[in-house]
Length: 604
Image 1 (spheres, rainbow, N blue to C red):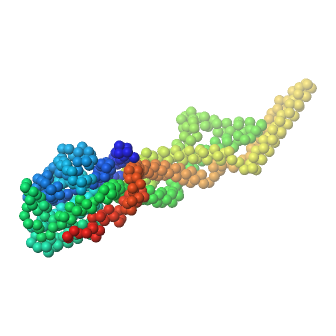
Image 2: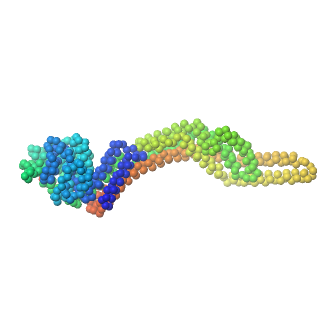
């Protein structure tokens, strides 16, 4: 991957991450948590957008008056930074670099804040030494600048003086920053101590404090930087101190840090920065959120039967009224399979018993034109308040389950607020309507036989009686007798009586009215409708939660991919890098090169 593509990929991933933090759909991220995540993202920006050539940034960090400026002068072998014993003098960053090293990004970012001093010393090739503003500065801008430098540092030398090494303002920064950069300690101004024993006592105290930060065995150099800054005539100032590791410090910076180790450290720092962002995201948005939600979904599913039972009880009377209202419609649908004269008879009786009443009620506005609307209106009469109360209780109960498991509830309120009682009742009505259509079309085998037999009997008997009556009336007409009208009325009466008998048989043989819906219609339809509402709530909430998690995690994966592609095959040389390109932070191997146990102490 080219340098330009790498930068574009990193910038795009960080922009997506920042956008996801600003506009989450379900996650609740506080301003403080957002700032922590953005700070971790900014650390990645500083690490991954540095020079493509492996140039190690060595930052001299410490409190006011500990001698950082004097130390950089000593390392440079000339006075490049103003030094002072009693006041902070590092207002502007001092950058000491080889003239052939790529410091373009540094120049662009710090042009107004840094002084760049170039040199030709080959032993400091690919090493950038930076004198940072004081960690305990009272100037907010200076502290912010130092923190920004620490974010992009590959190696930090924490500089102390005997009289100021316990400053809490300095240690408060160290507790946050030592996790991210390789570190070493410089105890400066040891010439102010009376004996080597005092030097050892303070050295042991510093080692113990850094051990408490997880840096046991950190490398420690005891020096008097002032004694190694040459005068104008090239001579050194004063006698050497009692303990002096300046030669070891120079050897470490100039010779022990070779190009391969520098590349290794830079890559490890970049991987660690990404892993740090992942860890901060995990602390704010745990990966187990979806598992916790699934636990809630299981509990909700187990509660559905009890909730549906309460709702069915609240709708018991309206459901009974619905069955009564649907009985005429069921009767009409029951009569549809019949045929022949008996079907005509049923149509006439149905119109008299049902049709006229329905027309009158519809004309008076008491019955909607559609059956689903009728069912919904009947259900809503006197029960809307009870349904609304049950929905609210369910909403609050699930909200409590979400809250106790650390899931955000803001989005839950938004998902559930648009579900009034009328919505649930409409679902119940739709379920009853669907069940009605299925039940009305379903008949047992013997029921179909009854329909066929009765329809056939009606056709044969009625047709036969009509035919006989016509024959007799025709005969009387040709015989000159006028008794046919009496016969007509007698035959009509017999047909009506016969059809009434058939209708009675049908009523006895086939289920009547609401019986077609079954005795469990109410509970079944209510449960299914409630399940639909709860599923809609849970599915919508989970989808938003998954979307937020994906939008936050995707940029981190993209950064890992960018880092892995920029590392190339050399990654295999560095065992502290996992296959994915992420540093193994549990063992903290990147600090090994800077511990007393891994290097000669050089006079300590």
